[in-house]
Image 1 (cartoon, rainbow, N blue to C red):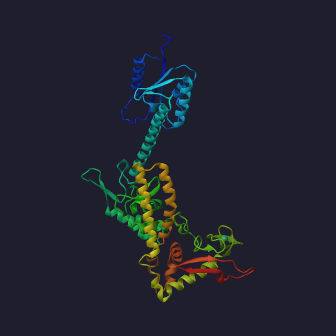
Image 2: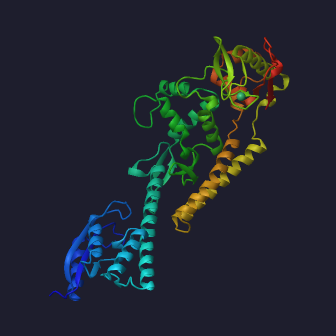
Image 3: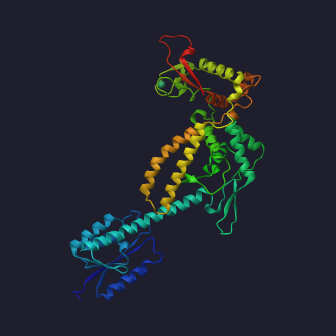
Length: 462
Ligand SMILES: [Zn+2]
């Protein structure tokens, strides 16, 4: 029958958000049934295998369908569900234009006739499309978030995190409890690093004591020790997509401020002793240029090792002269009668405030992440909040990271033979002591000065 309306059936295998498990064959049958009941002649069936609705891949079936609509080869488009037709608002708009131009009717098994020739019909189609898109995006975000959280809390693949054990709970979800012997290893590493030991020395000590490794390999390596002690979860911090977003549900192994200090010791470029090559100079990366503020690095000046402004070369001074001056000042300070006062056993008010501020900012980030997970705010809003809070958090963390000087100066401040103790210290610990006690700024000398001028070095005691 030539006057029978021509129908094009469109089926798409996609992520089944309705949970109906509808295969493409079932979609095809339903669509053909609908065409038959209406007396339409199915002239073509287009099928796309498109598991991820928003993967952006080209859909050959959809392209063919559009081509046949534009060529005037169909009168009716039959789809199983309106949101199986279009993947994006832009696609929907293109479809509406083509359908209106050709005077084609659109029918779906699920939603009946979608009348794209009226404003109300188009609005419904757009809304259905938007809802489908929103749900799909939202779901993938949620899934990713849950996966991420599982991974970060050590629950993925049934693995537990080193330092904790899984305890069974009545509701079957389980709970993480501290594994005392493993937690003691983490604390031991933190204590040693904070008392000025190098990563190399800590690693060697773990091996000589035959402490079992987290992964079961026979020997500890420096990177393993470093990674273990730097884990955010040691401080009870929850990480989401690589960023700390708040508190975890587990008991921390290290107090947060102590963990921050460890992080400062291991990640501060000025104390960098973890890359294998320990810093070879007392003041490189510690002393500053008095002109531009950049840190000083060691460079050769006519064959003489010298501290030089690393950014612009504003200032340069013989390394030996500056090291000698600073060393003498440190020894004098540590041998002074009031040296014991250098022990800071309690935190400064500034540091307490900074720690509290960082905690508060983390809580706000956590809250935003939860609101996002609950669908109260969208991804763009979350990004905006994160972008605003993160720099503040970084800044507060930097202020909270002042190293507790007590373990550093233990056995040194007020010792009967400060010079002897000092000479026995590792370079990395000497550098940490200098940084704890003072700031060193190198100013320009008078033009043409040939000898070292201590007056051109500004020392500020902390
Ligand atoms: Zn400079």
